[in-house]
Figure 1: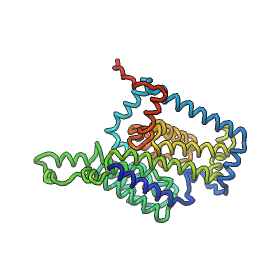
Figure 2: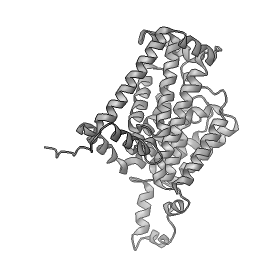
Figure 3: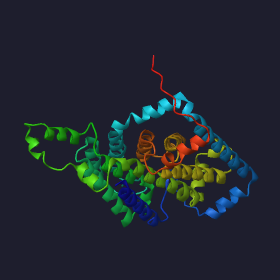
Figure 4: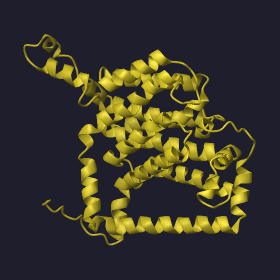
Amino acid sequence: MIRRTLRWVASAVALSIAAAGPAAAHVDYVTDETAPGTVGELFAAVFSSPVALALLGGGGVAVAAVTLGYLRFSGSLLDIEVARRTLASYRPYLPWMLRLSIGLPLVGAGFAGYLFSPSVPVNARLLQVGIGFVLLFGLATRIAALVGLVTYAWALAGQFPELLLAGEYVAGFLAIFLIGPGQPSADMMLRRMVATEGTILSRFQGLPKPEDVLSALGLTPAAAPVALRVFLGANFIYLGVVQKWFQPEQAAAVVAKYDLTAVVPVSPELWVFGAGLTEAAVGVLLLTGTLTRGAAAAAFVILTTTLFGLPDDPVLAHVTLFGLSSALMVTGASGFSVDEAVVPALRNRLGVGGDVTERPST
């Protein structure tokens, strides 16, 4: 059942990558620089510098040490176990989180005069505000998510390859479509009216429920975290590789504009390479479901740093990424992931015992 969903998701990812052209990136929000540059020049500048190689090597060793330490000791630390259980307990609020994460930015984009991404200044106010408000109310939620997804795909395939920057909307629309409205929502209120004998709407009790139809097609809520991971991870990879590595001069213009080398005293080339590497690494971790909650937390930190470090960057453009990263902290990797298939065995090889028992609070 879930396999059908995953095949469909994988096909959509492949189509999105195939459609990728020289799209604008988040750096377009804060600079108009279009100076030429190549990925070869960027890599040559970084890997010919002993200082850069030393910093990258040291960073890699530090990340590996932290990862091994987490795998070795996380099972015996009560704080981590309590945090994990607490995050998992937020699952009933997941549909609302997703609706807010998509609905609010859509309303804002409609009134701001751009289509999904600030890089696409197309006025579609009525459409986006309508979809956004319907999602916020939780009315005909799955239909609204499907309309939003079709609108995004039509615009991307038509004439706006820049919309690859807003690929997180695909993750959000798919997750909402798979999970449904949840509560609080208008759909849930209407469903309870239908289920209650004596109401006017109770005459519709015999109609099939949307989730039953989707389940028969193999589209279950269990696939929603996988869709979130795949498309959010692909988005981070795209931002890191295409935006930073394939457009190094444009990214370097951002470094120069905000004097970021004064914050971290390294060369502009290393700044660009490191930023791209970090985003791409987070994307790969999310895509493969490796240490998913940690990767989602890292994505949240990256977004927060961008928000405060680049004052011209529109906050609204990042709300969806903030919300979906938070949702992955709640769901974890779910199925078809390294976390599920590999990490438990690896932790056992490292000598990790059973999970700690949560002590009662006082």
